[in-house]
Amino acid sequence: MHNRRTASLVAAGAAATLIAALTPATGFASSQTTATNDPLRTYARQKPAWQRCDANHPATYQCATLKVPLDYGDPGGRAIDLAISRLRASSTKERRGVLLLNPGGPGGPGLDMPVDPVVTFPGGVKRQYDLIGFDPRGVGQSSPVGCGLTDGEQDLERPYQAGTFAKDVDWARTVADKCRATAGDTLRYLTTRDTAHDMDVIRAVLGEKKISYLGYSYGTYLGAVYAQMFPRRTDRFVLDSAVDPARYGRGMFQAVAQRTEPAFTRWSRWTAERHTAYQLGDTPAEVRTTFWDLIARADREPIGFGGKALTGDGIRAGRATFFHVRAAAEWVAGLKRAAEGKKPASSGTAGQDPGPVPPASARDVPPDNNAASAWAVLCADTRASWPRDPGQYRRDAVRDKARYPLYGDFASNITPCAFWKQGSEPAITVDNRVSALILQNEWDPETPLAGGRAMHRALRGSRMITVAGGEGHGVYGLGNACADTSATAYLTTGGLPAKDLTCRAPQAS
Image (cartoon, rainbow, N blue to C red; front, top):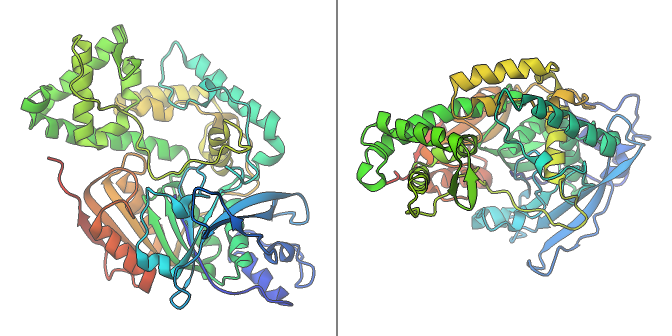
């Protein structure tokens, strides 16, 4: 979800400085290179040809295309395009630098983030920073990848059923095979570490010694990886809705399933207290019974609701709704009325929390780019976390459906990563004292609170702001004045809170 940075570095003849700038403190080092022959020097000295992005946005919103190495192990080899954008700081006098932005994903395009209407940047931030958006490699306008996947092949929501598991295995293998056949020479270089390298090229091209950064969701992991690789190049980092860096990969899906159960319990209590309004039961146990009776009924005969015929599995796929108690109560009450043949009382519908992810331009982007790039990054990054044996997924899905009935089997079922090849860059361990501010809603449906706390422990120089009672995916710029004030103060003054803070969200009535 988001980023930032600024400083001045590229000067004629500053080859040694450029090498240091583009070589991480830990991780990749360009082997056997010297100050006079480092191929990265060419990339760092690019001069962006800035032009107005489009007629629908202000002229001050500019776009350009850079070149970056496909393989940082072979910087003199093939180059790919990297689309970047900027909205200049509104004050020359107050300008501090650049703030890179990432919307999450993996597979999320970030080119439009400086002008994204969903996220509101305060005036102080816009005065001090050039807001820098970019589409990560393989995404959107940055040499986008596609695998030729059908709509059905892009569907991730696959509950475990004994009778359909063989089809799930075939799906996972087909997606991996299609991607390998269509983009096999590129996929292994679509890793988070490669994207972190790209961020450092952006930094050097913009003439900055350091970058600041705002990243959401997966973008928190990307920011943490950059900080681990380039600790001396990080300035002020805000990581919003953080991923547990130790569970990034398969563990992320399973963590979501685990956290859905207490969210469901919280919802059942809240709804029971409002039985008069929703008619779902006047005790938490009765509310839960009503819901699971609807699941059983939908398995016998799908319930027509919201323009769809929902099976029990289809209803369970809406598990993210339970992190928003009011929306979930309206949705389940509507399902109940529909099952009884009555007109739904509300228009509430279930689905994944959208998060502040702007759409990519459709220009020259394969229709399956989001799914293809997401699998490419996730699988290449975390190949070791995915079993090779399909039977292991079957056993795990059966076990986790019993442990976490709402979503456990979805989270542990087989994915294309079971058949993926290792990426070009090994996974990195996040463990440092780089300054960062972590923001986290208590009831985040995509990146659970425990993940934010784990990121906080891994980044020992960080502070954490928890929004108690906060619902939804994403905090900064989305309306919580307490969290926004602290994050803005950090971005504009560099001062982290003296200690971890708890903000409170308004209670759902």
